[in-house]
Length: 205
Image (tube, rainbow, N blue to C red; front, side, top):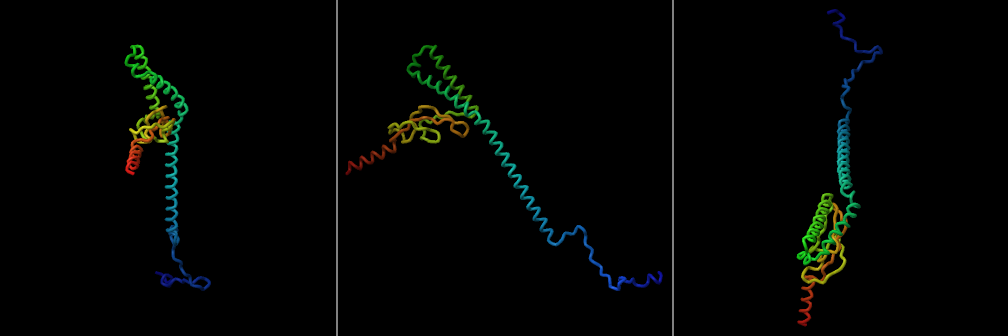
């Protein structure tokens, strides 16, 4: 070891001022508070991603429904025109009384059976495309599906019961294609019971 090595190194700058060493900072060390900032940004990015995914899923569902509705309800006009054919077939069958059928010759019976078969085939074809016939006979009147044409005094059924069908109704999917034209009972069992109670009260008085 030389004499120069034995001597302590001079830590004084040329200007005579002591040199103060600074602590070494790693380039990747985050600045104070940056961890919280990054976490907040990551959470916001995750929220944006989730919202985007939710919007995409809603768009997919809405598009799927619109396509399905277009397929189902796209034939609404055509189906409504076909209902006239179904009505005419039903009128043809209604024009032959049950008594006439019982005594009809084989030719007429074959004709009636052919009309019935045609009507069933037509209704089956309509059902394949989402069109269904309404048969509200004996059901409670529902203004969403029925249109009342007249009222019939009938104490044997509750008031508001459909007792006669003038024209069949049809639905397509969840929509009403054509309401059923019906006759509704008036003064049914409940009303008759109330009337009897009133008469009894009057007789007592």
